[in-house]
Image 1 (tube, rainbow, N blue to C red):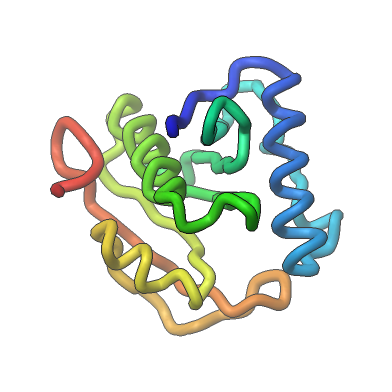
Image 2: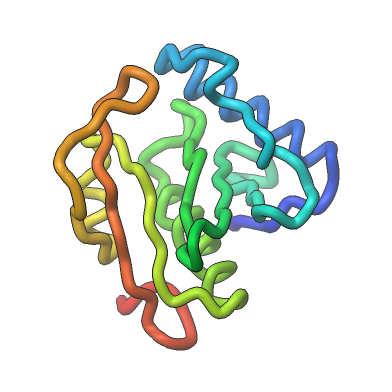
Length: 151
């Protein structure tokens, strides 16, 4: 299992396929809400793919909003959940943030994943709010110097 930065349009299309399967087909997010102007390889954000046995099965991206790294579009195909890929995706995105000199990250996590994010050092920083018809929470984390996770 590993996560790699997306560097080609072919890899980006693989990420889009995963997002379509999870967010649009499984969770009912409208197509027009899932894809946006940041879904390009133009430097405004960094995309990653997570691999299991050399197959892309998860994805995520990070973009910078007012000096904070915002982790977004984190998902794993249903068939590959529970293998620890979520942690690999988060760590890879945090490493990108650290490489860019960002020491604070945030994300809009679905409420059902709140415990997962707490285990990775995130703090709940808002009340529940709705995003694409799904309850979410703002989660934040201060990165330690030189890397993402404390343990």
